[in-house]
Length: 63
Ligand code: FES
Image 1: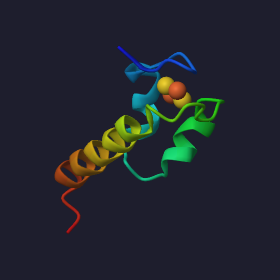
Image 2 (image 1 turned 60 degrees about the vertical axis):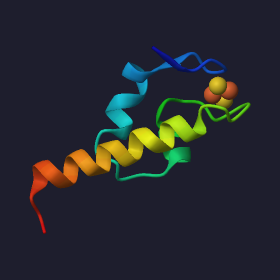
Image 3 (image 1 turned 135 degrees about the vertical axis):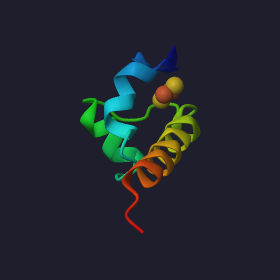
Image 4 (image 1 turned 90 degrees about the vertical axis):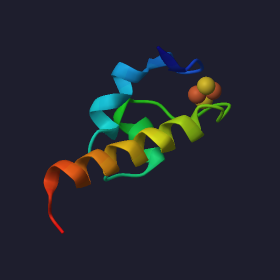
């Protein structure tokens, strides 16, 4: 599924960079070799980072 139409990024493109949830939104775009254009996808990328952090926290058990 396309998440960012401006940069033609799919959830599969983004997932490797959001799965750990340990970076910023702008770092995700940088890792994909681009940067936000219109910004409409930013909330979705932010949510992917939150989901990744939550999943990492649950599977890591480091608390
Ligand atoms: S949809 Fe991602 S910057 Fe426009």
